[in-house]
Length: 354
Image (cartoon, rainbow, N blue to C red):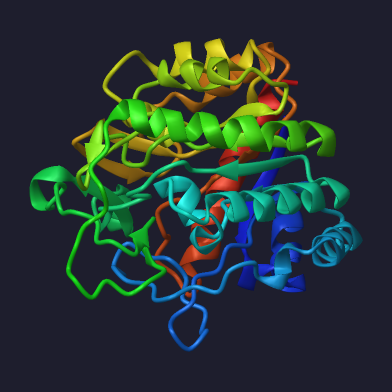
Protein backbone atom coordinates (compact mmCIF):
# COMPACT_ATOMS: atom_id res chain seq x y z
CA UNK A 1 0.00 0.00 0.00
CA UNK A 2 1.07 3.58 -0.65
CA UNK A 3 0.83 6.83 1.28
CA UNK A 4 -0.84 9.74 -0.45
CA UNK A 5 -2.29 13.20 0.03
CA UNK A 6 -5.47 14.73 -1.28
CA UNK A 7 -5.04 18.14 -2.96
CA UNK A 8 -7.59 20.53 -4.43
CA UNK A 9 -7.14 22.12 -7.84
CA UNK A 10 -5.80 25.39 -6.42
CA UNK A 11 -3.24 23.41 -4.35
CA UNK A 12 -1.50 21.73 -7.29
CA UNK A 13 1.64 23.81 -6.79
CA UNK A 14 5.32 23.14 -6.22
CA UNK A 15 4.90 24.10 -2.56
CA UNK A 16 2.19 21.50 -1.95
CA UNK A 17 4.04 18.85 -3.95
CA UNK A 18 7.09 19.49 -1.77
CA UNK A 19 4.96 19.20 1.37
CA UNK A 20 3.58 15.85 0.21
CA UNK A 21 7.05 14.42 -0.53
CA UNK A 22 8.50 15.72 2.73
CA UNK A 23 5.73 13.90 4.60
CA UNK A 24 6.62 10.64 2.87
CA UNK A 25 3.89 10.57 0.23
CA UNK A 26 4.42 8.91 -3.13
CA UNK A 27 0.97 9.50 -4.61
CA UNK A 28 -1.79 12.09 -4.86
CA UNK A 29 -5.57 12.03 -5.06
CA UNK A 30 -6.59 15.31 -6.69
CA UNK A 31 -9.86 17.24 -6.68
CA UNK A 32 -10.29 19.05 -9.98
CA UNK A 33 -13.99 19.90 -9.74
CA UNK A 34 -14.42 23.62 -9.23
CA UNK A 35 -17.60 25.45 -8.26
CA UNK A 36 -18.44 28.78 -9.88
CA UNK A 37 -20.65 31.71 -9.00
CA UNK A 38 -22.66 33.57 -11.60
CA UNK A 39 -19.60 35.60 -12.66
CA UNK A 40 -17.47 32.45 -13.18
CA UNK A 41 -15.48 33.08 -10.01
CA UNK A 42 -14.33 29.86 -8.37
CA UNK A 43 -16.14 29.05 -5.12
CA UNK A 44 -14.88 25.96 -3.33
CA UNK A 45 -17.55 23.84 -1.67
CA UNK A 46 -18.03 24.30 2.07
CA UNK A 47 -20.74 23.11 4.43
CA UNK A 48 -21.51 26.71 5.34
CA UNK A 49 -22.33 27.58 1.72
CA UNK A 50 -25.82 26.66 0.59
CA UNK A 51 -25.68 28.06 -2.95
CA UNK A 52 -22.64 27.85 -5.17
CA UNK A 53 -24.24 29.66 -8.09
CA UNK A 54 -24.41 28.63 -11.69
CA UNK A 55 -21.52 26.45 -12.75
CA UNK A 56 -19.50 26.29 -15.93
CA UNK A 57 -19.64 22.83 -17.49
CA UNK A 58 -16.63 20.94 -18.84
CA UNK A 59 -13.79 23.00 -17.46
CA UNK A 60 -10.69 22.73 -19.71
CA UNK A 61 -8.89 21.10 -16.78
CA UNK A 62 -10.49 17.79 -17.86
CA UNK A 63 -8.79 17.77 -21.27
CA UNK A 64 -6.21 15.10 -22.08
CA UNK A 65 -3.55 17.78 -22.48
CA UNK A 66 -4.17 19.29 -19.06
CA UNK A 67 -4.42 15.98 -17.22
CA UNK A 68 -1.18 14.77 -18.80
CA UNK A 69 0.47 18.08 -17.90
CA UNK A 70 -0.61 17.75 -14.26
CA UNK A 71 0.72 14.19 -14.14
CA UNK A 72 4.05 15.32 -15.58
CA UNK A 73 4.32 18.14 -13.04
CA UNK A 74 3.70 15.69 -10.20
CA UNK A 75 6.22 13.20 -11.58
CA UNK A 76 8.87 15.89 -11.79
CA UNK A 77 8.51 16.27 -8.01
CA UNK A 78 8.71 12.54 -7.32
CA UNK A 79 4.95 12.01 -7.07
CA UNK A 80 2.22 10.32 -9.08
CA UNK A 81 -1.40 11.34 -9.47
CA UNK A 82 -3.05 8.04 -8.57
CA UNK A 83 -6.64 9.18 -8.65
CA UNK A 84 -9.10 11.99 -9.27
CA UNK A 85 -11.92 12.57 -6.82
CA UNK A 86 -15.33 13.86 -7.93
CA UNK A 87 -16.93 15.07 -11.11
CA UNK A 88 -18.08 18.66 -11.12
CA UNK A 89 -21.82 18.69 -10.31
CA UNK A 90 -22.28 20.95 -13.35
CA UNK A 91 -21.11 18.11 -15.60
CA UNK A 92 -23.55 15.41 -14.49
CA UNK A 93 -26.54 16.88 -12.65
CA UNK A 94 -29.03 15.40 -15.12
CA UNK A 95 -27.43 11.96 -14.74
CA UNK A 96 -28.11 12.21 -11.01
CA UNK A 97 -31.59 13.66 -11.53
CA UNK A 98 -32.60 11.65 -14.63
CA UNK A 99 -32.98 14.90 -16.57
CA UNK A 100 -33.13 15.70 -20.28
CA UNK A 101 -29.40 16.34 -20.69
CA UNK A 102 -28.23 13.03 -19.20
CA UNK A 103 -27.21 11.46 -22.54
CA UNK A 104 -25.17 14.53 -23.50
CA UNK A 105 -23.59 14.71 -20.06
CA UNK A 106 -22.75 11.01 -20.15
CA UNK A 107 -20.78 11.48 -23.36
CA UNK A 108 -18.77 14.22 -21.63
CA UNK A 109 -18.09 12.00 -18.61
CA UNK A 110 -16.92 9.20 -20.90
CA UNK A 111 -14.39 11.57 -22.43
CA UNK A 112 -13.19 12.62 -18.99
CA UNK A 113 -12.57 8.97 -18.12
CA UNK A 114 -10.75 8.37 -21.43
CA UNK A 115 -8.53 11.37 -20.75
CA UNK A 116 -7.93 10.17 -17.18
CA UNK A 117 -6.63 6.86 -18.50
CA UNK A 118 -4.42 8.53 -21.09
CA UNK A 119 -2.79 10.54 -18.30
CA UNK A 120 -1.89 7.32 -16.46
CA UNK A 121 -4.31 8.01 -13.60
CA UNK A 122 -5.48 4.77 -12.03
CA UNK A 123 -8.85 5.60 -10.52
CA UNK A 124 -11.70 8.11 -10.46
CA UNK A 125 -13.69 8.62 -7.26
CA UNK A 126 -17.32 9.70 -7.37
CA UNK A 127 -20.28 10.13 -5.03
CA UNK A 128 -23.66 9.20 -6.52
CA UNK A 129 -25.87 11.35 -4.33
CA UNK A 130 -28.51 14.06 -4.69
CA UNK A 131 -27.98 15.74 -1.32
CA UNK A 132 -24.21 15.32 -1.43
CA UNK A 133 -22.03 15.86 1.63
CA UNK A 134 -24.22 17.99 3.84
CA UNK A 135 -24.82 19.06 7.42
CA UNK A 136 -21.38 18.97 8.97
CA UNK A 137 -20.55 21.68 11.50
CA UNK A 138 -17.39 22.90 13.15
CA UNK A 139 -16.58 21.80 16.67
CA UNK A 140 -13.70 22.00 19.15
CA UNK A 141 -14.35 18.59 20.71
CA UNK A 142 -11.26 16.96 19.21
CA UNK A 143 -8.28 16.44 21.52
CA UNK A 144 -6.94 19.63 23.05
CA UNK A 145 -9.78 21.71 21.67
CA UNK A 146 -8.67 21.29 18.05
CA UNK A 147 -11.08 22.54 15.43
CA UNK A 148 -12.78 19.63 13.71
CA UNK A 149 -16.17 18.73 12.23
CA UNK A 150 -19.20 16.97 13.63
CA UNK A 151 -22.66 15.87 12.60
CA UNK A 152 -25.53 16.24 15.05
CA UNK A 153 -28.83 15.50 13.33
CA UNK A 154 -30.90 16.97 16.16
CA UNK A 155 -29.48 20.43 15.48
CA UNK A 156 -30.18 20.29 11.72
CA UNK A 157 -33.18 20.33 9.43
CA UNK A 158 -32.30 17.00 7.84
CA UNK A 159 -35.62 16.97 5.97
CA UNK A 160 -35.00 20.36 4.28
CA UNK A 161 -36.08 19.84 0.67
CA UNK A 162 -33.73 20.34 -2.29
CA UNK A 163 -34.89 23.13 -4.63
CA UNK A 164 -35.26 22.51 -8.35
CA UNK A 165 -32.09 23.62 -10.11
CA UNK A 166 -29.87 22.32 -7.32
CA UNK A 167 -27.97 19.09 -6.74
CA UNK A 168 -24.98 18.26 -4.55
CA UNK A 169 -25.37 21.70 -2.85
CA UNK A 170 -24.78 23.46 -6.16
CA UNK A 171 -27.26 25.60 -8.07
CA UNK A 172 -27.07 25.05 -11.82
CA UNK A 173 -30.34 26.78 -12.86
CA UNK A 174 -32.74 29.42 -11.55
CA UNK A 175 -35.71 28.26 -9.53
CA UNK A 176 -38.24 31.02 -10.02
CA UNK A 177 -41.27 29.05 -8.88
CA UNK A 178 -39.91 27.83 -5.54
CA UNK A 179 -40.35 24.17 -6.50
CA UNK A 180 -38.43 21.17 -5.20
CA UNK A 181 -36.84 18.24 -6.98
CA UNK A 182 -39.03 15.23 -7.65
CA UNK A 183 -39.53 12.77 -4.80
CA UNK A 184 -38.05 9.36 -5.59
CA UNK A 185 -37.61 6.09 -3.74
CA UNK A 186 -34.64 3.80 -3.29
CA UNK A 187 -35.53 1.70 -6.34
CA UNK A 188 -35.42 4.75 -8.61
CA UNK A 189 -32.05 5.91 -7.25
CA UNK A 190 -30.54 2.45 -7.77
CA UNK A 191 -31.98 2.42 -11.28
CA UNK A 192 -30.20 5.70 -12.03
CA UNK A 193 -26.94 4.28 -10.69
CA UNK A 194 -27.33 1.19 -12.89
CA UNK A 195 -27.88 3.40 -15.95
CA UNK A 196 -24.70 5.32 -15.12
CA UNK A 197 -22.57 2.24 -14.45
CA UNK A 198 -23.73 0.36 -17.55
CA UNK A 199 -22.46 3.23 -19.67
CA UNK A 200 -19.35 4.42 -17.84
CA UNK A 201 -17.79 1.07 -16.86
CA UNK A 202 -17.07 -0.25 -20.38
CA UNK A 203 -15.28 3.02 -21.14
CA UNK A 204 -13.40 2.83 -17.83
CA UNK A 205 -12.33 -0.74 -18.56
CA UNK A 206 -10.96 0.26 -21.94
CA UNK A 207 -9.17 3.27 -20.41
CA UNK A 208 -7.71 1.23 -17.53
CA UNK A 209 -9.48 3.34 -14.92
CA UNK A 210 -11.27 2.07 -11.80
CA UNK A 211 -14.45 3.93 -10.83
CA UNK A 212 -14.42 4.26 -7.03
CA UNK A 213 -17.71 5.01 -5.28
CA UNK A 214 -17.57 6.97 -2.02
CA UNK A 215 -20.08 5.94 0.67
CA UNK A 216 -22.74 8.38 1.81
CA UNK A 217 -21.47 11.15 4.06
CA UNK A 218 -23.21 11.48 6.44
CA UNK A 219 -24.43 7.87 6.14
CA UNK A 220 -28.09 8.60 6.78
CA UNK A 221 -30.67 6.37 5.03
CA UNK A 222 -32.57 9.48 3.97
CA UNK A 223 -31.35 13.09 3.80
CA UNK A 224 -33.05 16.27 2.61
CA UNK A 225 -35.99 14.27 1.35
CA UNK A 226 -33.83 11.99 -0.81
CA UNK A 227 -32.77 8.34 -0.43
CA UNK A 228 -29.10 7.45 -0.03
CA UNK A 229 -27.20 4.59 -1.71
CA UNK A 230 -24.44 3.33 0.59
CA UNK A 231 -25.44 4.18 4.15
CA UNK A 232 -24.60 0.71 5.51
CA UNK A 233 -21.44 -1.33 4.77
CA UNK A 234 -23.26 -4.19 3.06
CA UNK A 235 -24.73 -1.91 0.42
CA UNK A 236 -21.32 -1.63 -1.21
CA UNK A 237 -21.71 -5.27 -2.26
CA UNK A 238 -24.98 -4.40 -3.96
CA UNK A 239 -23.13 -1.75 -5.98
CA UNK A 240 -20.41 -4.19 -7.02
CA UNK A 241 -22.94 -6.85 -8.00
CA UNK A 242 -25.23 -4.39 -9.80
CA UNK A 243 -22.92 -4.13 -12.84
CA UNK A 244 -19.98 -6.53 -12.39
CA UNK A 245 -16.76 -5.15 -13.85
CA UNK A 246 -13.06 -4.98 -13.00
CA UNK A 247 -13.56 -1.19 -13.13
CA UNK A 248 -16.39 -1.19 -10.59
CA UNK A 249 -14.64 -0.37 -7.33
CA UNK A 250 -14.95 1.64 -4.15
CA UNK A 251 -13.32 4.45 -2.23
CA UNK A 252 -13.28 2.97 1.27
CA UNK A 253 -13.79 5.96 3.56
CA UNK A 254 -12.98 4.65 7.02
CA UNK A 255 -14.68 7.52 8.81
CA UNK A 256 -17.95 7.14 6.91
CA UNK A 257 -18.00 3.34 7.31
CA UNK A 258 -17.32 3.65 11.04
CA UNK A 259 -20.21 6.10 11.36
CA UNK A 260 -22.67 3.53 9.99
CA UNK A 261 -24.96 1.67 12.37
CA UNK A 262 -24.71 -1.88 10.95
CA UNK A 263 -21.77 -4.25 11.14
CA UNK A 264 -18.25 -3.02 11.80
CA UNK A 265 -15.41 -1.51 9.82
CA UNK A 266 -13.09 -4.51 10.17
CA UNK A 267 -15.52 -6.99 8.61
CA UNK A 268 -16.19 -4.48 5.82
CA UNK A 269 -12.47 -4.05 5.17
CA UNK A 270 -12.06 -7.82 5.01
CA UNK A 271 -15.03 -8.24 2.68
CA UNK A 272 -14.00 -5.66 0.11
CA UNK A 273 -10.21 -5.83 0.25
CA UNK A 274 -10.31 -9.62 -0.16
CA UNK A 275 -12.21 -9.04 -3.43
CA UNK A 276 -9.61 -6.50 -4.57
CA UNK A 277 -12.33 -3.89 -4.87
CA UNK A 278 -10.84 -1.04 -2.81
CA UNK A 279 -9.27 1.43 -5.24
CA UNK A 280 -8.06 3.75 -2.48
CA UNK A 281 -8.97 4.52 1.11
CA UNK A 282 -9.62 7.57 3.25
CA UNK A 283 -8.00 7.18 6.67
CA UNK A 284 -9.60 9.26 9.40
CA UNK A 285 -11.11 8.59 12.80
CA UNK A 286 -14.37 9.44 14.53
CA UNK A 287 -16.25 9.00 17.76
CA UNK A 288 -19.88 8.00 17.60
CA UNK A 289 -22.22 6.98 14.81
CA UNK A 290 -25.07 8.61 12.92
CA UNK A 291 -27.01 10.55 13.88
CA UNK A 292 -24.35 11.96 16.24
CA UNK A 293 -20.60 11.77 15.67
CA UNK A 294 -17.44 13.86 15.86
CA UNK A 295 -14.28 13.65 13.77
CA UNK A 296 -11.12 13.35 15.87
CA UNK A 297 -7.40 12.79 15.43
CA UNK A 298 -6.44 9.62 13.60
CA UNK A 299 -5.05 8.00 16.77
CA UNK A 300 -7.87 9.07 19.09
CA UNK A 301 -11.17 7.62 17.86
CA UNK A 302 -13.25 4.46 17.71
CA UNK A 303 -11.23 2.90 14.86
CA UNK A 304 -8.12 0.87 15.67
CA UNK A 305 -6.08 2.08 12.71
CA UNK A 306 -3.37 -0.55 13.17
CA UNK A 307 -5.99 -3.29 12.97
CA UNK A 308 -7.57 -1.72 9.88
CA UNK A 309 -4.27 -1.42 8.02
CA UNK A 310 -3.29 -4.96 8.98
CA UNK A 311 -6.39 -6.25 7.20
CA UNK A 312 -5.52 -4.30 4.07
CA UNK A 313 -1.94 -5.56 4.22
CA UNK A 314 -2.99 -9.18 4.66
CA UNK A 315 -5.23 -8.93 1.59
CA UNK A 316 -2.43 -7.42 -0.52
CA UNK A 317 -4.01 -3.98 -0.92
CA UNK A 318 -1.81 -2.00 -3.31
CA UNK A 319 -3.80 1.22 -3.46
CA UNK A 320 -3.30 4.57 -1.79
CA UNK A 321 -4.14 5.67 1.75
CA UNK A 322 -4.93 9.35 2.26
CA UNK A 323 -6.16 11.34 5.25
CA UNK A 324 -9.15 12.94 3.52
CA UNK A 325 -9.39 15.48 6.33
CA UNK A 326 -8.30 15.80 9.93
CA UNK A 327 -8.62 18.15 12.92
CA UNK A 328 -6.58 21.30 12.60
CA UNK A 329 -3.61 21.83 14.89
CA UNK A 330 -3.46 25.26 16.50
CA UNK A 331 -0.41 27.00 15.04
CA UNK A 332 0.53 29.29 12.18
CA UNK A 333 -0.55 26.78 9.52
CA UNK A 334 -3.35 24.67 10.92
CA UNK A 335 -4.19 22.62 7.82
CA UNK A 336 -0.62 21.57 7.03
CA UNK A 337 0.13 20.79 10.67
CA UNK A 338 -2.96 18.61 10.97
CA UNK A 339 -2.19 16.79 7.73
CA UNK A 340 1.47 16.29 8.66
CA UNK A 341 0.42 14.73 11.97
CA UNK A 342 -2.04 12.37 10.26
CA UNK A 343 0.43 11.40 7.52
CA UNK A 344 3.18 10.73 10.05
CA UNK A 345 0.91 8.48 12.08
CA UNK A 346 -0.26 6.53 9.05
CA UNK A 347 3.30 6.20 7.76
CA UNK A 348 4.45 4.81 11.12
CA UNK A 349 1.65 2.24 11.14
CA UNK A 350 2.52 1.20 7.57
CA UNK A 351 6.16 0.68 8.54
CA UNK A 352 5.10 -1.74 11.28
CA UNK A 353 3.51 -3.99 8.64
CA UNK A 354 6.70 -4.65 6.68
